[in-house]
Image (tube, rainbow, N blue to C red; front, side):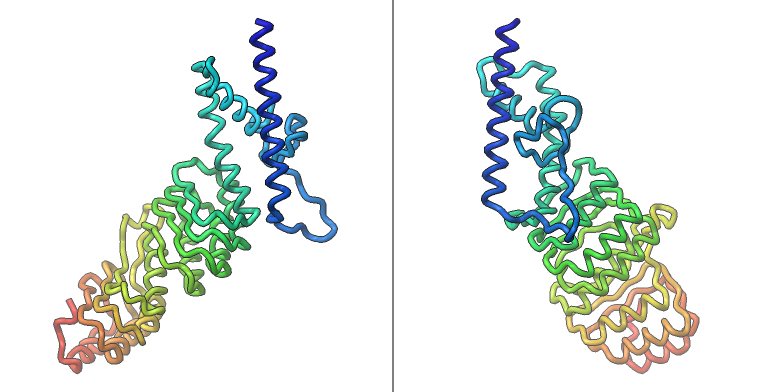
Length: 321
């Protein structure tokens, strides 16, 4: 029994030593830690006494040694002849996942130049972690591809994400497909995308956000965009994902397509246009020579007569279904 305890102690000491060396090398090789405001004291990410010697950057995930030291111990034992017990295998799995997320978040905060793609889908991010991630991305200049998947984006996090979209000029791919967004948050993202010229790919099943990205691509005359379609993926009661055509949206679309030479089809599943929206659509049809298909069969128009007159003047009734 005493021999087993002594062997465990030696493993812990070796793990502690390896973590300490790794952290020391990282600190010496990199000056990537985000600068602190003048007159403030940097807030340590770990306060456990067991981590002080190792200069650990990870928060303790429970009593005893910090997760990084404990995982190092388990890894050493895993490679030994003794191996891990079933209980230790479970412990290793439970510690490894949150520690990996913690390490990736730290790399984003430090603006690690080697971190180009970050995949956090299915990692069980908390609301606090999502907010922390978006806050770190405001000044990050390394991450080009961010895959988040079905996460919960509450309104405070959505507000920061809007700011990221407006000011971050590095992020080129963002995947939030399946993310839960409130209707106000989706509308805010819709507006924020109007100020972005960097995103090339946006994965989402939110009608508002998807439409805003299509308008952005149309405004930039993206040669790969041939159809601008307003999607209504779910019933209106489901997370507010429907994107019905309205006057303001029609004006945005008309402005984006004014000089576009690639979009040939414009479609909207549902919607209603008043005077302003109908006039914007009429002007678009007059000025754009690229559109060949206009599908709005379920949309209502306050001034149908004016729109029909424009279509008749164009001599191309096939453009409206």
